Amino acid sequence: MTAPGAAAVEYFGHGAASPYERALRQAGGNIQLIAVDDARMPQPIDVTAFLADADAVDIDALERTRGPILDVGCGPGRIVGAGASLGRPTLGVDISAHSLAIARRKGAIVLRRSIFDRVPRAGHWGAVVLFDGNIGIGGDPVGLLRRCSSLVEPAGSILVETHRDPSRSARFRARLLDEVGPSLSFPWAEVGDAALPALAQDSGLVVASRWAVPSGRRFALLEHPGAAQLVPHSTTPASRGHS
Image (cartoon, rainbow, N blue to C red):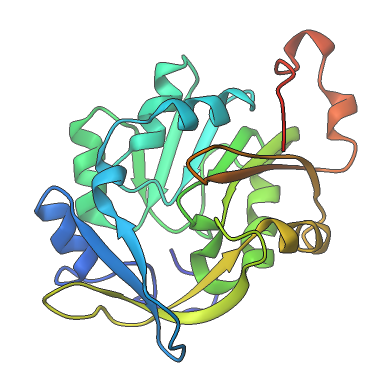
């Protein structure tokens, strides 16, 4: 996805010859996310997981939200399919034509566009989803969260999968890398639990809940201030244990 004013080519995995597109065409595999100006260890990206069906962790997270679902950076449609399986209207948006073709073959309803472009039902989504590190889209978490905030209804929520390292907070230029070579660079960000409350506040949101699962994945629900008072008691998600 591109942020406002960003060059059209600067998004995750862009280009038909990029490692991401190669992995999709090969039906999975691991690629690496590397920071252009940082010597830290590369981070593996498991494209096979993107291509798989949603797991119990994905489903549990979605069930903590309500209403129609908008999946940002939907890729091959894992979360779009999961939302539909719950009987909820679900739309995915992404830039990658190849990943969207895969999603459509699975029956997912998806659109090829940036989240910063015109999106159907703006202001009326029950939940906007940022899984698999997609809080990093555009390298500007506050700008992205503000955009997502404008898309949800007043009682809606933004479901974020945060970094596995709770202390992680970084904005940087990144590349994807496989055995053939690197992608072009693009702006990216990584956000752990510790940084999320301040980012939410700067975006006009509050952190309603946070939780982690044994595999190490971590999630948070963001809402407009006072959103909980707008939800009828009968439609409030069941209470769950949070960490």
